[in-house]
Image (cartoon, rainbow, N blue to C red):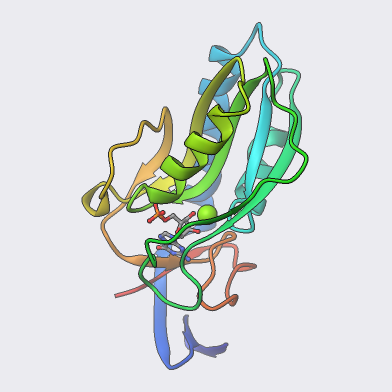
Amino acid sequence: MKKKAENYIINGKEFSLFMPQTEIIQIVSNLAERINYDYKDKSPTCILIMKGSVFFGADLMRLLTIDCRLESIRSSSYGNRMESSGKVNIQISDLNIKDKDILIVEDIVDSGRTLKALLVQLNALLPKSIQTVSFLSKPDKRKVNVDVKYIGKEIIPVFVIGYGLDYDEQGRHLPNLYAYV
Ligand code: 5GP
Ligand code: MG
């Protein structure tokens, strides 16, 4: 990863500023406010989908004033490309969510395939309720119909990195979002 003026170059592809940290903080705080209100009498288990939602999940959960718990599972579909492979790889190990209120914490919903596959597998473990919070969504890229209750921001169909999102495992640590356009 190389820096070129305000842009980053990864594997020869140039990414430019798409969303500054100030806007990210605002989006996360709006989501937390909605969740605090809706779950005020509940104690949800937040399941962070790794690795993409690690920063979002950490920031969001620290703004939750309700009683909540943290779990994580890994999923991958992009590999080192910018388009979802369509094949979703989910690793659910010893997750006990029976009769619990579940909040899936995602970085971004694109085709919707990852979330759909996750919902099928998690619902099979018989949670009491299950909802999803996603930092970003690309509605124009949706291939399957999936319900996302809390969406931080809908964006145009560009490939973004930063704030947990990577390109070929690079760029996750950037505090702003950058897009390949
Ligand atoms: P979907 O299954 O909805 O097509 O893709 C969801 C997953 O693909 C996300 O959880 C994320 O890991 C990855 N993804 C989707 N869009 C982007 C993007 O613009 N940038 C990055 N870095 N990852 C993305
Ligand atoms: Mg993800």
